[in-house]
Every structure is written in structure tokens, then in C-alpha cells.
Length: 85
Image (cartoon, rainbow, N blue to C red):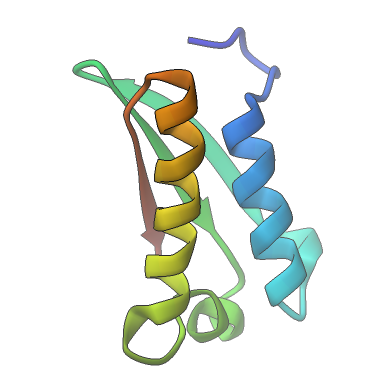
């Protein structure tokens, strides 16, 4: 697990994608946790930007998870993305 204050490339990737989608990029928060061998990335955005990050029928969120999974496969690690309300 990265030291406090350090960010992984995966965290930076999700933050970059989310900040590109929302109206209030300064309110994007990304945290990474290790839960039973799987890294979990929690994404929090401003309430009015939640729909932009999730997308119609969850397509944008699914695409972000696909990109994360593809990048994680290269590192031989498991990552999960949780979008918090």
C-alpha cells in the first residue's frame, strides 16, 4: 500500500478521467485502499457531477472500470472502482 500522501498511477488515472468529465474538478477526490488483496479506488465528486461520472445507464462508469482493469492487468494486480455518492 502506498505511503500516506502518495498516489499510485491508477489513482492518478481515475482522477484524470474524472476531472476531465466534471464541471467542478477541484472537488474530485480519489482514495485507494487494499481490501483482501484487491485494491479499491473510491471516487467522490460533487453531487451535481455524479451523473456525468456515472453516465447514461452507467456506461461512463463501466468504461472507467474497463480502462482501470486493462491497466491493472498489465501490472498483474486487481483493482475495483467504487463511485461514492
